[in-house]
Length: 467
Image (cartoon, rainbow, N blue to C red):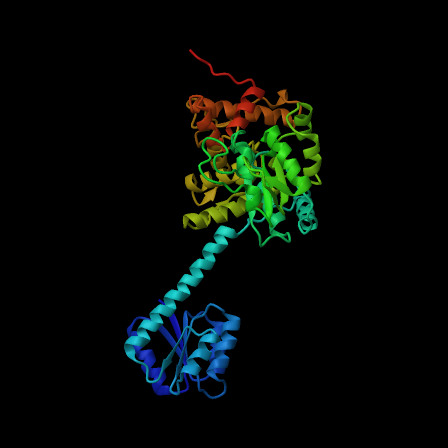
């Protein structure tokens, strides 16, 4: 029910308006002067104010100005028995939704009130949607590694320095890039993102630099590339380690000369772009293998920010998990669930081969499948991050909840990296077999690029077993 406030020094007008509006199922309060009216506006939330212009103690125009300074989106309908065109114009300039003369026409009053409330709702909804679309998530955590990243962002973002962001898949490299842009002098200009691994090598140059009509078979019209779209802003080249050598050469030229040429074109176009790049690869090894240009590496790596693996900052897991828990429950429109202390410790002990991205998916799974309080048994039952646990395995349950306890022999691992490789191998093997070795479906299932999955299969020597 919409809540309305009437400010008018004439008792008869207040009573009449209140009776009409309450009959239309509005909740109404009234006051006889502007000073107390302003006080009510500051203390309570109103959806609409109807305010007289000529009043004792404080003029209605002054009430309008002060109220909108405090609550800019609050709709005001001004009322006056001495209304003129000039008065109506002045009220509109000061931010009033509409102006009504005394005595008010009933039909016009109700239509104006309804329209003002509709406009107020639209303004509020638009602001909420804009926040949802544009809000950059916070970098969660207070570990030494994360604090160092935040400090580096604060120092580097306002400059024009290029930044190379390194780290494993799902660790949050894109989030670092977004904050670098958000805190830069270019924040009002666009941030254009390009996933170099997702674009075939034969199309990457067209994607980055654009092409002219007829430059190749499918070029039926001119295309503007990402460098041009990011002009004046920031270009984020994600997974740059997967970029073809020919495209690398053109990117290098664009960084050196601040000029590009569209595919099939001859005209040089000047571009003013700050480039941020990210990769999960060891670029020095890629350089040794002849897959990446040394000169481009040095152009990009002015500042290096390494995002640590989640297992290297387990002290941040509770903060991240609780934030995900609250956000996902709100998205689902359900009461926020809780995680027991033992459940949180269980989360901290998982290998997290998928990093923060996997933690988000895990929390969503636990919200859906668990009761009000998420326990360590829920974590054990629904985790299965590396093949170590098995939900309800027949004949192998060691607990009352029917969850098998991992039989992994930890003594065989010399260090943590060996265990992570083992867990990652078992996880990928499990998913491949579950999807009948459909590599595309498995890559989508575990949220990595298909090319990366092929690399993992080769790295771990995984082979399909046929009967």
